[in-house]
Length: 181
Image 1: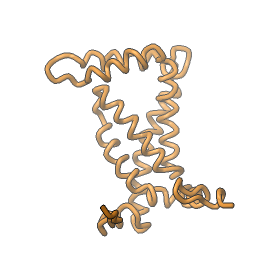
Image 2 (image 1 turned 135 degrees about the vertical axis):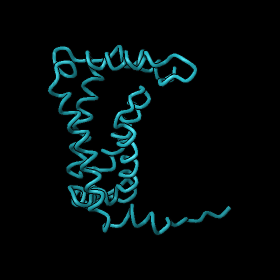
Image 3 (image 1 turned 30 degrees about the horizontal axis):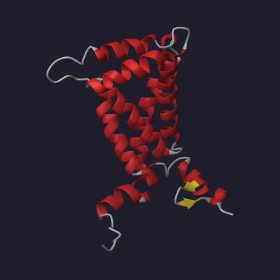
Image 4 (image 1 turned 45 degrees about the vertical axis):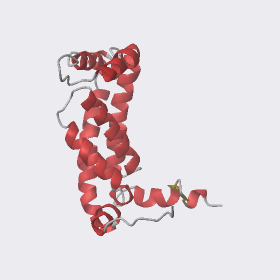
């Protein structure tokens, strides 16, 4: 079987690879980044997330998630409940710090447009975990916007630090200025 390189449709190239759309992605990126930064900052100021009572708030969240595992169509699946009980709860203070700092750093990266695709990817991973734990709120919106930012990673940070950072660092398939011999 011969391999063929399939071209992206023009509409996909326009939205995800054309710097003409960078201003739109700036707005989306800053909105999503602000939501993460604000959530993370609030947690970083809380004793129950990163202070002397670290893990208390996350324990409450997990207990709420575990209460949603009953019934014919539970909000939280058994396998995820098992992960929460066996991996998160025994290390809840560490996870609380990871959530608080993760939210803050994701927000910072998105607002600055620094490693935008990576920041959006980790944001989408966190949103996925919140959704799996049965927390809806703004998570589906941030999840969807993060997918779009990941797809547009080449231009989403163009009006931002990535404009300078990506040419210097490059990508795994094309080294940047810092890694060329």
